[in-house]
Image 1 (cartoon, rainbow, N blue to C red):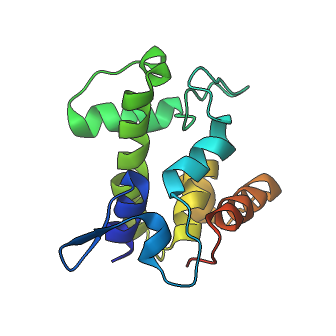
Image 2 (image 1 turned 180 degrees about the horizontal axis):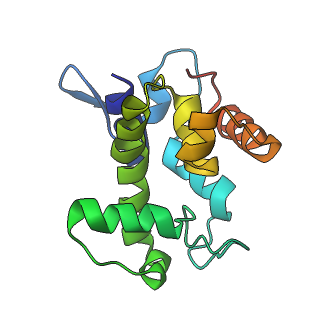
Length: 153
């Protein structure tokens, strides 16, 4: 269920009962922003040419290990420079957040929650496995959830 909700949030297509809802009308009484747009603002301030000091690139700050996973699992050969293309960057990040991270969480017997997905996205699955939550990542999770306008779990 979380995977379907996250995919809908990331794509901006929340569907229920055959009726498409905008993110703002999906949840009565809450102002739910589009997760993808929030993450783009937090990750790169909307700059498709953003590069972190650690080499992550593009709107959603794709890292080399995440891109290597994408290429392996999808039989594609994107390179790091391709991550400056906003469509490819979002394609990889959506897959990573909605498919790859949940798969890794299941493999390691870790509960699949929004917090754990964001933790793995920001700090890496190895830190989630070891229970290491860097302050930067804790702040990142709080910032994302705060900007979404609701406390999701």
